Image 1 (cartoon, rainbow, N blue to C red):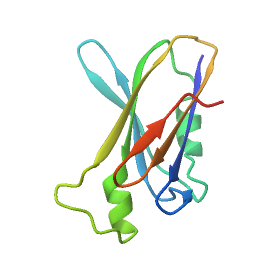
Image 2 (cartoon, rainbow, N blue to C red):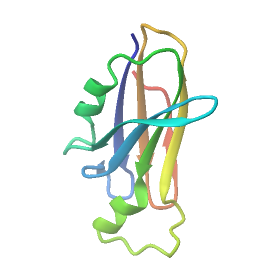
Image 3 (cartoon, helix red, strand yellow):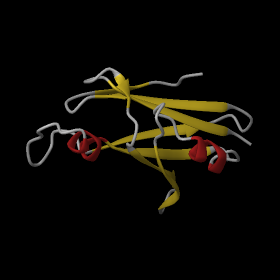
Image 4 (cartoon, helix red, strand yellow):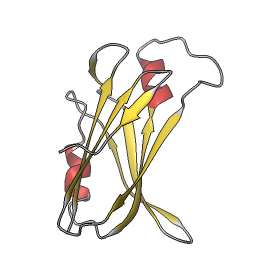
Length: 117
């Protein structure tokens, strides 16, 4: 089975995005199913997500990061509605035995992601 991990970095403040909420979904042809929700730890990681997602099958998935809520808690003045609210990263698992690391680098105005190691 495939494994999954994630890591979020706050590029506005140059630190891990500790406290940011993230959710993992399976994206099917007819429905989207919530698999797990987590809050990132002091290192910006979600070890409980890694454990919950340790047996993913080949298919399509989505991570949804609560970017605006995170920056509001940090005291950043955001417009209403915020430029970025939830950031969704859709990705595919093609190798049943692979490890997939999906990091997010985010500010209130931009984000980037890639397949990490």
